[in-house]
Length: 201
Image (tube, rainbow, N blue to C red; front, side, top):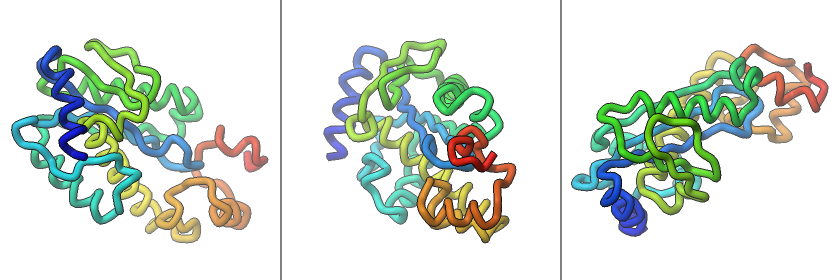
C-alpha cells in the first residue's frame, strides 16, 4: 500500500521536481483548533506504513509521526484557534492554515498536493486530491502530523479542564460531550459559531 502512495507522488514529482502534501485535522469538533500540516517527504528515505491517519491506530500514528519528523525534507504544523474559526468560518480558517503551513516550508516545493476538493491561494501551483490521504504518501504523512498534533493538544487541554473529558472525544460532538456542555457550560476554547444552533451562545 505504501508503494502505491509513493508511486502517486513520484508521477507528479517527475514534472514538478518537488512537492508537499497538505492535510488538516479537526474541522468537525465543537472546540479546539483546526490543525493543518504540510510535509515534503524524501523519496530516497521513505516512511514505511504511511497511510490515511483515520485507518491507523493511535499507537501506529505516534510511531509514524516520529519517523516522518525525522525523515522529512521539511514539515510545518499550523493551528488555527476558535476565535479565527468563528471570524472566518471553518473553511476559511482551514485555508488560512494551509496557506501558512505551505508558505513556511523551506526549501519551497514546486507543487502543493491538497487533500479535498479545493485549494487555498498559494504562491506555488496547487492540486486538490479528493481522498488524497488514501492516495498520496505526502498527503497521508501530512494527515498523520495534523492528527497527532491536534490529539496531543486536546489531551493537554483535557488536563486543564478534566470535567469535559476531552481526551475521550477530542472535542467532537458526541452525546457525552453535549451532556458535559450542558453541565459545565462553554469555555473560551469552544467555537461559538458551532454552538449557536444548539442554543449554548
